[in-house]
Amino acid sequence: MPLLLIFLAVPLIEIFLFATVGSLIGPWYTVGLVIVTAFIGVTMLRQQGLATLNRARQRMNQGELPESELLDGLMLAIGGAFLLTPGFFTDTLGFCLLLPLTRSFVRSLILGMIKHRVYTRSAQFGHSPIDDIHLDVNTHHEKPARRGDTIEGEFRRD
View 1: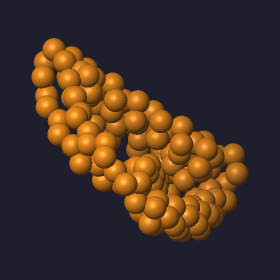
View 2: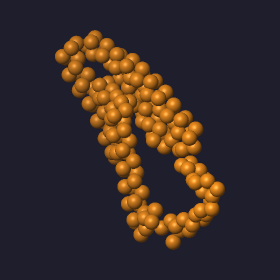
View 3: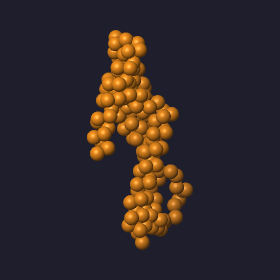
View 4: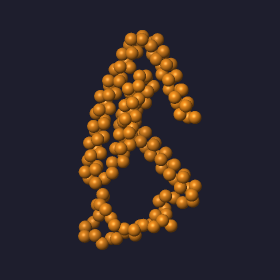
């Protein structure tokens, strides 16, 4: 049901904005503005996409999982699709996903919703997903463990 509302609301918002902006600045300037925002968006998408890819490669080279970069890449792809869709509302959403400051805010919202959902689901079964994992770690290493090192051990779920 919410998806149906989105598919109905977004075109109506776009039509209203086209009519309003077109009556204020004229139809040709309105079309030109949509084309200019698309070009700016594609340029920003390319720049932000390459920066995100470089950060992901750097983290993988350090032996870390680039989870925030993967989420950023997904948000950049969605933002790019919004920017290629003609309209002022979708352009605004697209730019919000392309700009690093607003993208990090959206990322924190998404991660918060995911965390909330995981804890809510696990509470339905009477346990926390983290509280019931006990690790017995072998601590006899020749060198101290660094981030990204593999540590041998056993775990059990109570």
